[in-house]
Length: 625
Image 1 (cartoon, rainbow, N blue to C red):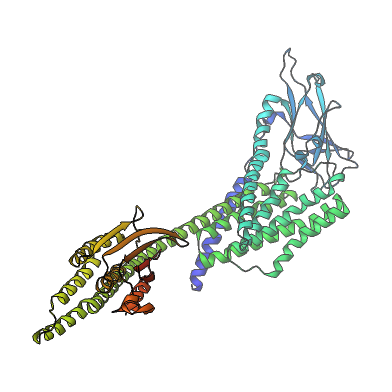
Image 2 (tube, rainbow, N blue to C red):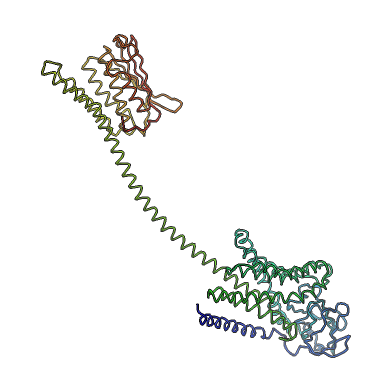
């Protein structure tokens, strides 16, 4: 941004701040609520000086506890009437404490109400005058002014008249100068607690902790009232007096960090005046701490306010955002009323000595609350935008994942189909292929008067049916495949005049295996086929018994299939323990191992028994071999 544009923005910013100053000046010069003019007393005699003064009156001294000045005033009594209304004395403003007497009888001592004696509060006082004290003619009113600093003594115009005429102005002043600051301070205390909790949860953002500390000090000064005696509460008074410099220092730290600036190490010096005032108050007592406050307090607060105003102005010229403009305007309000209060103390700006800086500080609190809310809302919008982007990215990722899963499923389907095709080709090669080779060989021998080929063709047909049956979807229930196998074996044994004894020893037969695949089925059926074929060809058996049962083992339920015959066994064939003639044990054991099953063959003179213990869970089949 060029120099002309910077100058233009700076001119606009300063013009706005000047307008705010004009509005604040108009507000500060508005008349405060006052009782009717006819009840006001302006002429008084000041003792022990013995001179006439006009109210409002400013004293030159800040400490009059040893010899407090006395203001003597005179007023006419109420009209004589049987049922006259109650009269009262109202003091709109005084510093610091007053003792009021009518005709020599004390009716008000503000020291009994600590909050009324705070020099930074514009607290009024009112007291009803007992009717027995009022005389028909002139009455004497005395006001003893107690001053303990750090401000000079001040007494505003005094009003004496009917309580009904004075009370409305008193109540409006209480509303403006007591109730309103308390309400604003209560809101400030709530905000301080919230900010403190935010800082505890977000330690990486110390600006919240600085602002919480600043507001807590302001709340402490508002709600805690030091007693007028001062001597027994020196520590409390020290904290109250030092709270304004410390509060301002924490506010500067907050603004610097909140605006995203780097806090210099020299910023720690801002806390030094407040700490010095606190230490002096704790060690030396109330009088030295008030004198020290007059030297350090106003200067420190003014320096913090001016520094904050300059920092915000520079940041606004760089960013030109609404939040910075709002904060700068709020600081201008506080800065104006702080200067106005200082001029009031010096009797330059106004003779009423009504202080606005503490109330105006609430304007800055409101601006800070708006700024924090704006920042929070903007952060929520950013979170919503980020969430929307994340939803879009997640949807895009889901679409890509679905496409990837579809491709993987298609690839897995193709691989499974390829594996089944490979297995089927291997089974056909191992079974039907060998049978066809035998048929070709027998066909050639037939020409030379060899064995007929019918038996070999029937064996090839059985093997083909075996492969086809194994491809049926049996849902993991091996009993369905065994049922079809039983029909084929029964017809085969019937042709050789061998009886089939089929027994299911357990009601459920065999357990269901969801992982059972056609490859497992064909291995089991071929193993059983080979056991039956060996018995038919070599055992000379009259009966073949097939038993099926479910057993409970360490790994869970598993099935057992037993094929036994009543033939002559291996020994009668001269094979001994080497295995049955033909393909032998190796082929049957290889099929059992592929399924993860255990095979046991026992042979003797009473016959041969083949026991196949199925696994609790069938393992995946390899595509090769």
